[in-house]
Length: 84
Image (tube, rainbow, N blue to C red; front, side, top):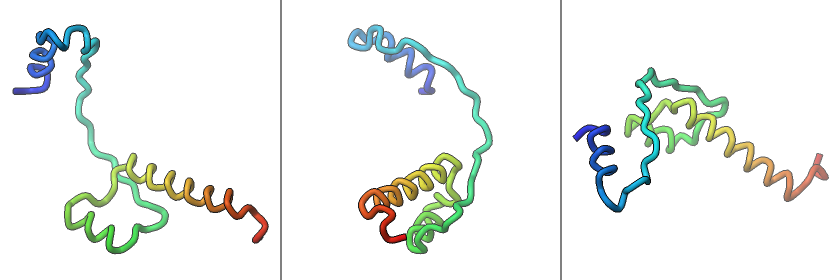
């Protein structure tokens, strides 16, 4: 069963009444990959490559960068700039 048919099926079920209010088709597009400025730990990158999950998609690379910044901010917030 394809996705539109499945959604139509759900919409007809009594307990799903009015729970699906919008359906939109978004056409596929080419995947966008992004290199990281700082490489991943070697073991992690090897595992991702072995699972065909590397290189990272652009949204994954952006999330990785955001997590690194968040960690650095926590370190700064804890220790402040007194070590500078």
